[in-house]
Length: 340
Ligand code: AKB
Image (cartoon, rainbow, N blue to C red; front, side, top):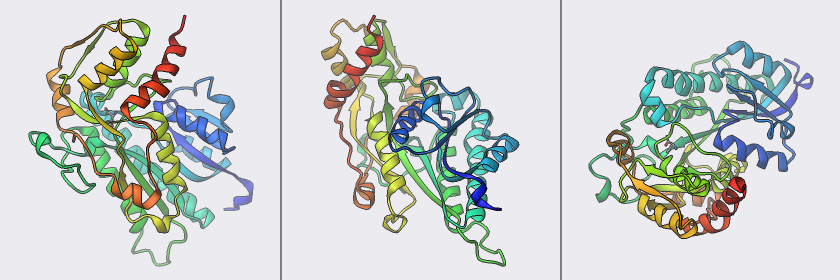
């Protein structure tokens, strides 16, 4: 394959999602050539920021092969996924999108590297949903990556398995091939906490109560929170999430001592979240109306994770605490967004 015929590009799947928005903005500031794929046409606001965009299914092999016939994919940010609540309604579809979709993209990454002879970077957002701590949550220390990875959701199972697939592709794929493989896949995963974005409201997740509460308050609409006030998990403001993706992407491979990293910003309860919302939107109408099954999912996630390796290996360091995320990022941007 003559690589000179193809333009180098970064491929982003699930580009219309919460993280895709922030990532596309950040990469366009670095003048990166991005090819964006999403099931739906790319949001109009994002279109001028990318080199090309394509509506379609990541499982559509012909579509993906058409893209790589035009672009030399040097990096894949594989953001497309069905989140935890939605996946419980359609576990088999979730498995197809979250696992088969990832497998196909890992194969594509490998194919790209055999054409170019250079390792293709594969950046994979995993999640705290990879853990399963039901019944023990209150007694645990901040969890390391290898501890309690017995998830109770299809999404969590998909994430843990894809972390293994990524490690396998990075180190062992085609290990019995007669000729040594040139290139290969440089897989890097991050286990994200619940993310809160000022630009988009999440859909289909179980950590969604945090962002939903603040977006509802800014719009002056009542909100019934679907978990108990004492429910505690780690959260992070979206700019820190995007920065983490880019920092891990930029790190030299030799500096990485593991393929999957926890990151943490602040652990807070739904009550802590509510207190911040009240401080900034005193008229907010929030009630607590726990949904037992969604509550059980969040109760299976740890209250805190240990992100020491990410800090040590690639300098992860979040900017925002709960208070500063509200004061300096969420409230100003969300208020402007819903201003009449
Ligand atoms: C979800 O709630 O499913 C996601 C996650 C924590 O991975 N936001």
